[in-house]
Image (cartoon, one colour):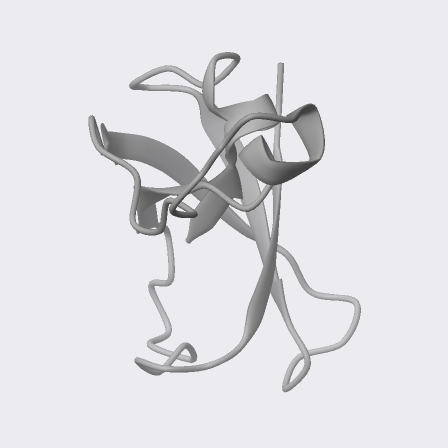
Length: 83
């Protein structure tokens, strides 16, 4: 998943998360943050404002618990990071 710069600082390795996909409404899949990118995936040419910094995103890798193999690569998903 990708997170904007303003959420990047509050995430940590091992942090729990919940993944939900449209194919399985009402079902949640537990996940754990396993990698946090140290460089932005997209940086606007000229970042001078707070609004411009929101366009910077960082890749976050999750390990998702899916023992039944329901999830497929490329499925759109919503992720909620737990505190």
